[in-house]
Length: 212
Image (cartoon, rainbow, N blue to C red; front, side, top):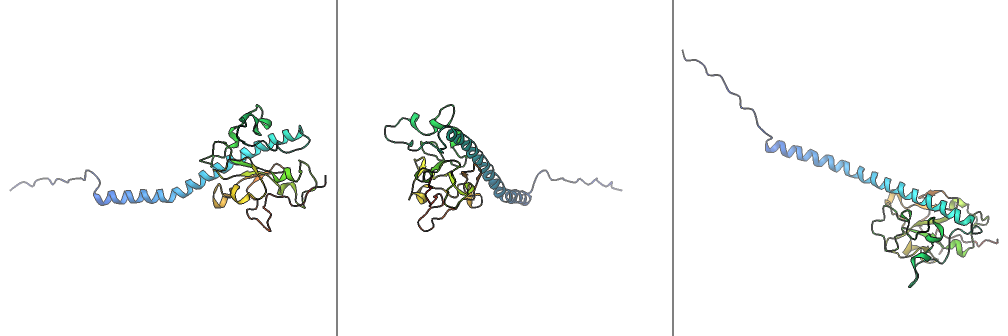
């Protein structure tokens, strides 16, 4: 009788084309699901760092105010033709004196101008003669009065002046949900400032001039 030959089973040595396509498709799907979450996490992290910057700036401005009769910041020390950087306002506030400390840069401001500053000081406060601890704030509380906020990247300026709100302020630096961050007169930082001009008054203004 002929002897039976043992059957040989040929095991696959790799992925078939269909299996490879399925694996690639699963990986692409996972990436598509994860990318928005990673983007949101990155935005959140940059917003938190931005808030930390503004907190630190607020503390330095408070020290400046304590040494300057309550005035919140040095006015009139922006960039002018021929003006050296040593005369820019940060040199008068930060110790050691420096015109471009890293805390003036928001991490979400990817293309800042040569001024190396992502924030605007509210020049309405100087025009209204408002100092720290001013009591007449046009019916507002210190927690509603903006001292500093985020500006448009291309703007070469330190101060927000009357009539410049739409061209100067960036209300959505960190996206539609996180918006932009603001330092308020009571030194807290959040993203709740108004973004619309109403009756010709921008949300950073304090319409009623103080009497003090």
